[in-house]
Length: 244
Figure 1 (cartoon, helix red, strand yellow):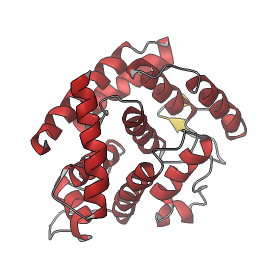
Figure 2: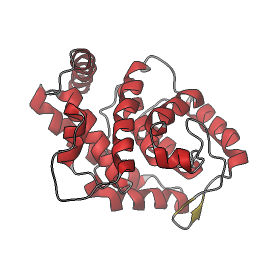
Figure 3: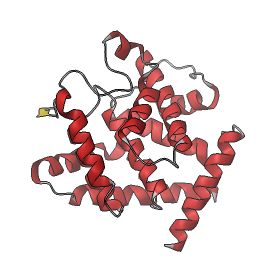
Figure 4: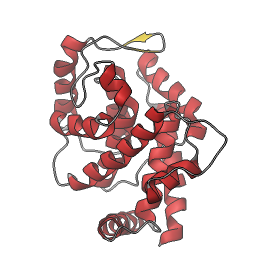
């Protein structure tokens, strides 16, 4: 436990210092690139790790014969902004308003979403699905999110509680698009805020992640999701040891 606290203290301190100094060589930049690349890749982003790093480091894309979508660049930059917004608001309690702010940072610069009339920084206005599964209808989202927040704010937060919050959040699917990315950022944030080693879901474990969410939806079991979260905690911890 003491080692976890030491690690989290280190992370929070370095995030603040390196961000203020615009340091692109430390754990802040590494985490920005790692989380943005994997979270967007899970959603089908065409950008590579090298392209993600270049975008974050200097705002350009390296020369390549591979194609990329403008939307992927816009969402990658939005993810960087969303992460910074998360750091700026760590002292605030998690709320529906704050979650909407995260979504706004992620999506406000995405031309395609604006052209499609998607609500940006607000809950969805049209029904949507996860594969073949229905999600909460737009007129019930505020109520269901309120119930989720009421439940969460009365919990002693640990990794199992965060797994349940994440699974319920994704089942509600409150936004037209960007639910997975906002959900995974909230997961990272609430780990930081509650003294828990953060979880970064790797794209390499995408199928395991989706299976775990399906298991919760069908059986209300969190076993697979908790196991995955614990594995991803160790992955992130080991990667960050390099910077300590």
